[in-house]
Length: 338
Image 1 (cartoon, rainbow, N blue to C red):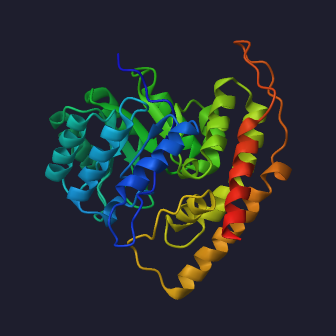
Image 2 (cartoon, rainbow, N blue to C red):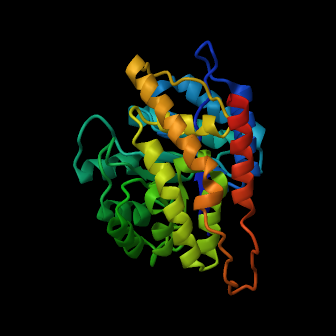
């Protein structure tokens, strides 16, 4: 039986150089930093990675570079959404050959489809590819995947091994888990909604694909670790500290510009998006960056000194080292910018 995907997978931003090309060196350096800070896996070519703003050839290049650079340090869940079934199957097979753990496929976008059509789309892909497939439910941008559709795919398609759900709908996630886990205990449930990471882990999710982990990987990892140890009070305290950061970044117009600005606050200049921004939008993004700098620089004050209770396995933590790490890096970056 295949082991489920667990932990925090970072939907990493794709760095762009001054000429508008993929900055491969910075991409490698950035993911090295994420891995060093404790993320469990990477999720390139997702929404945060702006997959629609790259060509199919560029998307393949991103995965190839990461697979070769990361090796077996952490698994890679590769976004493989293309505009039609044939191209999606080709992308899946290419990424599988490169060595990814699984691919993530969004439900068909642009056309609003019935659930029967959504099921048929995923089934044709899952029956054709050799790599494991994770469903990607993001109703904001694509046809939703309803509970019974997830259940049918899980029971009829062995290659469908999980779902990433970015709806933020906790009852919906609970219904999916209840409908699938008794028959497919290895099926992975990953939340893509950072504002509910701890509650989603509480109800049984295996982990998350969270854009904030590209900015504060220490904090998202700390939430996951607390939940894994059953330290729910600690997890919820950390979750409430994550919330203002997430809100500031997600509310920034032209997603994922807020997360790009968040990374810049941590010292990672990942370049401009290929989506042109007006002068007013640039000013707004700069204001968001200042807000994020303020939030992060106050980490030492608004992050309580939580002493975790002893876990069932007897493991304890006496300090929150990640707090000091975040504060130290942010203050160094603020001094450089000043």
